[in-house]
Image (cartoon, rainbow, N blue to C red; front, side):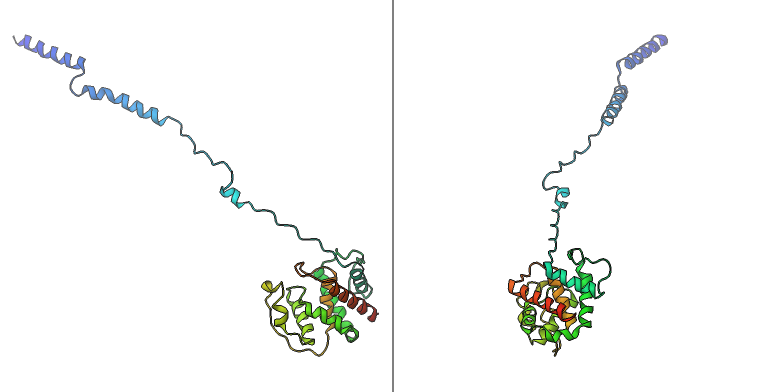
Length: 232
């Protein structure tokens, strides 16, 4: 009887294992769940698509229109050539004579030459036309560079022209650091100042927002011609 009872227990245990009863069913499902995790992780990740470089993207906004090229200088023909020739003949300009190609010479280099020439020929100033010089003085400054500004101011001071009168209508006022600043009264025309100013005009080295009238141009050309002739 004991043998038959043991046989029944053995038979029921075998049936439970075969049927997957108890906790065996949940253990049998785990391999499937783990496999599913591997299958998800193995899926390749898709890269985030880049935006098309169209209007409004940062790259497009960074692009700027190219700046316009500066207008080529157009020196005043024979007047510029004659002035430079005088500088070469007097030994003020070194190197080959480029008086027939005044656009090649940098104005910054010629300004200093014009000042030295004027300093050496100061006596000429008293023979120059006062009316033509006053027209140049009333025009204003042909540059916002410091030395040129004060050369123009000293010429205006000789004619007792108030700075406020000139500076209030000057087209270069917003970029000038010395607007309306007065200088001491001068009792003579300083030729080195005058030559610096005239040279900038004849070399077309002044800002083009300044409008040189035909009347002023005639006065400048006459002053240059007279200075050349009187300094021979």
